[in-house]
Length: 293
Image (tube, rainbow, N blue to C red):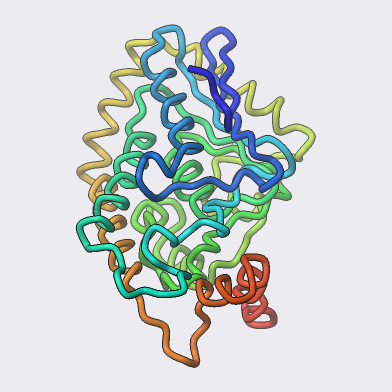
């Protein structure tokens, strides 16, 4: 298929998916009806293309421009649930909310269970669903040492819900995972590798070279060996509870979309409605200055 928001390339046994919205740091529309998530639909379609191509053994996902992916497009996020509208007399039903979030769950599991070896190549800002949907769900994550990685969407009010918290705990341990999701703080690629969030961190000017070397090494494995290994890990992930964590994530996200903010609490969606997305974004993070390092 022809792609508008990504670049899909194949060389030998390696396929590359490049998120290609550099003007917005590759922010994507992850949640909503399929007609509203055209950009991420292309990502999942490319993964499907790679899955069905017997020549492909390894799939790399990367980002064009100065960042990998900053997660949800905050100029659009929430509208499907009625957030930030002038009137909320008729908000979406629980059925609609669950349908939107179940679709997100299904695509996240699709990457975790992808039949080929998957590599996330990250640099610049790696936040929100850029970190959860792509980096955590990939088999291997190689990052630039100066990348800024975090779960900043938590500052909208999630407080540790609505993301794949369980798989993060398996990566970095309970205390570090809870710290990252409660604070939404950004950490460097170097720290991410040190605590197990990334496989390794390398200088930014060596990132392409290192990812290519790892991909070529993985491509030396036999096709059937890769298929058996990935299928076996499906069983292991299920036994560990990682697959089920995607289920709680979409249900907790649906519950979040009914969140009520009290008068003394920061409501990003209200600020965005009244002052614009830029003011809402900066106001969300400025509150943490001097409190979270």
